[in-house]
Length: 382
Image 1 (cartoon, rainbow, N blue to C red):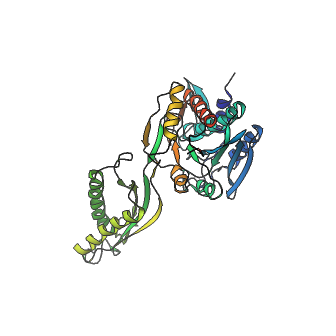
Image 2: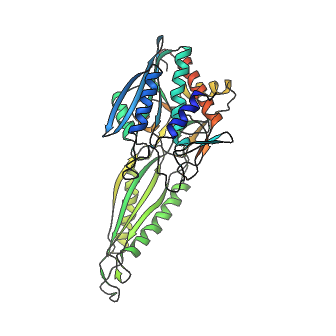
Image 3: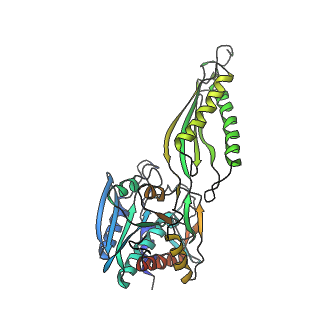
C-alpha cells in the first residue's frame, strides 16, 4: 500500500501549477490550491483561503492541539517554474526510489511532507497550534509569503524547501539591477557621427567583472559565504549597419548579512560615475528593479538543535548549513518568525529532469511530525 504522503505527492505533481508571472498564460496555482484545501479539510484542519491575486490563493490550514503550547508553522510554495523541454512534466513516474516530474523536488515533496506531518501529529496528539501554509509565487516575487505574514504569525517556522534533509539556517539575499549605456545612432559608415552604446557597455562589464572578483575576495560571512554578482541578460542594437544608441544590461547581485540593496546600488552607481569621470562622452544609468534580503536563523534559537536531535532519533544525520538559493524564510524572518529550512533531497531543480528521493520525503514527514508533537522548548516555545 502506498504511503499517504507519497500518494499526495503524486497528486500534487500531476497538477500543472507553473507560475504565470514566469510563463505567460500558465496555469497558476488555483487548481493545486483547491486540491490542498480539500485535503486539509479532509484531515480535519481549519482551512483559510487567502486570495493573493485573481485565481492565485494561498491556503492555510490550522490545527489546534489538545493543550496550550507554542505555535509552529510549516510553509511551502506550490508554484513551479516552466516545463519547456520536458516530455511529460505532469505525469509522475516512480523509478529506483525516486519520483520524477516538474515540482517533485522544488517543492511539492516538501509540501506533501508538511501536510502529511499534520495528519500524523493530529493522530498522535500535540500541544499548541500547527499552521500549514501553502503559498504562491515563490519562484517569481514571493507575493504569497508577503501576504501570508500580513495575517499570520507563529513562534517559529520550518520552510520545507529541498535541503537533502539538512537544516538550512541561512541564505543570501539578492538584488536585480537594470543598467543602460547610451550612445548616438548613426549609419555604420559614419564613425564621426556615431557613438556605440554596446562598446560602452563593454566597459561596464569589465568593471563589473572586477567588482565581482573584489566581492568574492572580501571576508565571507560564516554562514552565507561571500557576496557575488553576474550579468544575466543584455540587449542592444537594431541592425548590422547602424551604431547602437542604447544597450541594456540586467545583473543580479547576491547579498550577505550586513549588506543591503541600497549599499549594493551605491557600488553600481560609483562604478558608472568612475567611467563618466574618465570619459565625458560616456553616459550610463542604473536602476534597482527588485530585491530580497538575506536571512539567518538567530544563533540562539533552539529550533535547529531540536530538529537535529529529532532527525538523529530517526537515523538521519542533519546538520546546520547555509543554502545557496533564496527562500521565503527571509520574508518570515523579517516578519519576526524565526525560521529554518528542512526538506527532502533529489536533483534537477529547474531542469528538464527533476526528481525527489522518496525515502527522504517519508523521513521529512516523520521528523516534521515529531517536531509538531515535541514542541519548542521554553516557557512560550522559545
